Amino acid sequence: MGLRASLIICSCNAKLLRRCLEAIGKHTAHGHREIVVVQHRAGDVAAMDRLLDTVDCVRVPYTGPFNFEAMNNLGARHAIADVLVFMKRPALLVLNDSDYPGLSRLESYVDGRRARWIATNYLFRGVLLEPGRHVVRFAYEPGSFAAGAAIPGGGLICLVGFVAWRRRRQDSGVAEAYLV
Image 1 (cartoon, rainbow, N blue to C red):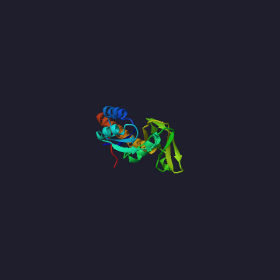
Image 2 (cartoon, one colour):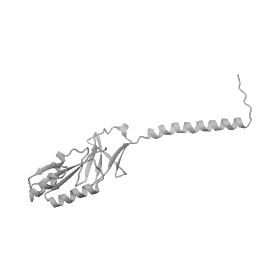
Image 3 (tube, rainbow, N blue to C red):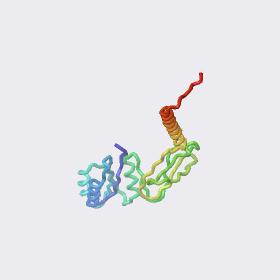
Image 4 (cartoon, one colour):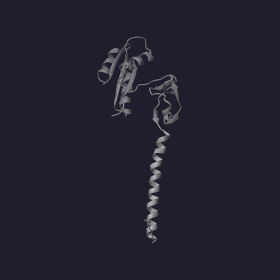
C-alpha cells in the first residue's frame, strides 16, 4: 500500500477550500492519504462547516489570528502520516543511523542526485535540504559487494573457458595419457 501521505490544508474560506479539495481529488493519484483541514474559525463558519460535513477529512478548529505556521503545526499534531516534512527554509534532514566508520559507503541521494552527507551530533548522519519538496534516499553501497559479485562472475567465466577448451581438445583428436 505504501506510505500514507498527510495533506494539511489551512483555510478560512469555504469557496477556496472546495476548489482545493476538488483539485486534490482530480489530480492526485496517491490514494493512501489523509486530509487534515485546519479550519480557521473566522469568516463564514457555517459555510465551512457545511462543506466539511461532506468531506472525509480530519477537522482541526483554530481560533487565533490567522498564522500559517501555527496552523500547520497544529495540523501536523493531528496527522498520522508515515513521514511528514514541510520546510520554508533550508534544513538538515537527520538519519538516526550511527556514523560508524565501517558504514562509510552509505550514500545519500536528493531528487535522484548523489548528495554529500554530514556527521550530525557526533553520532548520526544528515543531509542538507533546500526549501521545497524533495525525495531523499539513503542507500548502503559497500565496495565489498561489487568485489563479492565479481569473484563468482570471474569463476564462472573461467569454468566456461575450461569446458570450451576441453571440448575443443577432445574434438581435435589429441590423445591424452594419464600417469599412474
